[in-house]
Amino acid sequence: MTSVNDQTQIEQETGNTEGESKDSVKQEKEMKPEESNANSPTELSKLTKIVKHSKPEQPLGFDGFKKQYYRYASKFGTTLNLLVVGGSSLGKTTFVNSLIQGSLTGKKTAKTSDFMQHRLRMTDGDINFNLTILDTPGFGEKCDNSNCWKPLANILVQRLNAYFENEIKACRQLPIVDTRIHGCLFFINPTGHMLDPLELYVMKRIDRFVNIIPVIAKADMLTPEECARFKRNIIKDLQHEHIQFFHEPGKSIEGINYGMPEPFALIGATKGMQSDSKNAIRGREYPWGVINIDDPQHSDFCAFRNFLLYTHAEALIEKTHKVIYDALRTERLNKLKSQPNGFYTSSKKLVEEYMKAELGRVERSLRQTVQDKLQEKENLLAYTEKQLEAKHKEYEESLINRCNELKSQKQSLENLVRSDKTKKHSIFFK
Ligand SMILES: Nc1nc2c(ncn2[C@@H]2O[C@H](COP(=O)(O)OP(=O)(O)OP(=O)(O)O)[C@@H](O)[C@H]2O)c(=O)[nH]1
Ligand SMILES: [Mg+2]
Image (cartoon, rainbow, N blue to C red; front, side, top):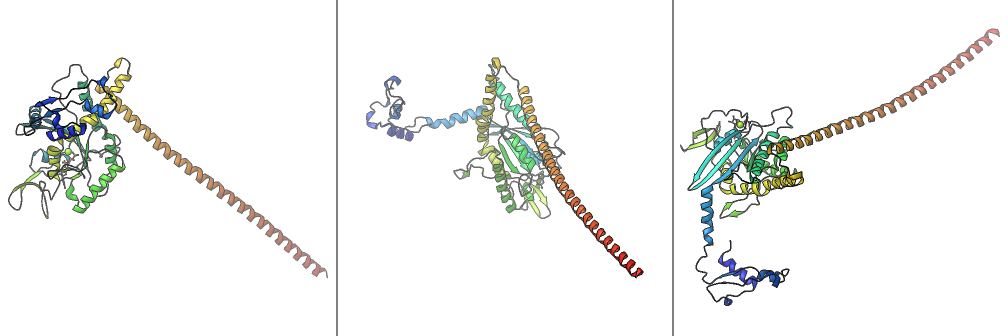
């Protein structure tokens, strides 16, 4: 959007002066491309249409753009889809309940055994906000967790593919319903040290398909210093492992920090209670006191809710559309192009293909690991064998030496005995 001030700047850059304008709004003559030297930057600037506004005190109407956007947003609303992922019993369901202001019965949440979708339609004035949260069962409970990322990747790819399939149809289903996941709230075990290898493994498998938003679960288990250190360690681990996660360089607009420098530390609550000042709060009770999850001094819950709903919803949606979906779209279109007669592959088949390829990759890496271990063991065996052979040879040599020594001792003793006998014989005959 160009303001009147910007307009003046453009005029200065293109060398036009206010004195040149005679009519109230004058349109500069457009040069035909063949008349100009298109390669020269000064000539190129002359091709630009410049509308001069002789009464700068009267607005051109660009400021109505905000209203246009407002009307558009209130007509169609905003849709944000979130996926909640993490190890088992890290408080995912409790957090979802806290976010959507669900049940505050104080009852223990049941173990999540399947994907659970919560839909919420919120209104703020005329603007509708459609929030969908997909709660998932916790991973990491099996002996072999190498496949625990698959259901997550499956749902992410499926939804991206569904959007792509609708988009490439000649007659698209309108309005387009966006079911793509815009953010993955990744609950991290509050160890206080570093990320769990399984957490890194799962993140690595899904970071191509979604904006990963790392959050520290059950932050009440950490002291403020431990929590601050843990946040820094998490970022270091993610950068070290080249895991793509959602972040923006910290920037502050009108006193609100729009950046996301560190993971949020969350505390979930299932119980409504009264604070010391008799206010109704949502919190957790401990022998030493009460934690109010909405208190910014106790947890980042409020900051995180603001981040998701007020400050970064658009950024999450835009990044999903312009970066994540675009990469998948390019890949799929290239695939379509390379196939004879633009052969179309259904999303189910694409997911199957993806899963097959990933399974092949995991299998190959496992086979390689087993082979490496086998080779290591064989090398160790060969080394031990060599050492044993050398020891055996040494022992054999020492035995032969000892045998020769004993033989020579025996010989000398026999000689001694023989000389004694001759001595005795000579004395007797004397
Ligand atoms: N200390 C502490 N406990 C919590 C917090 N949030 C939830 N819990 C407790 O952790 C237990 C598990 O909570 P859930 O919300 O069921 O955890 P989940 O991650 O959904 O578990 P699964 O669905 O089995 O993976 C419950 O007893 C909760 O009360 C928290 O912030 N701090
Ligand atoms: Mg759960």
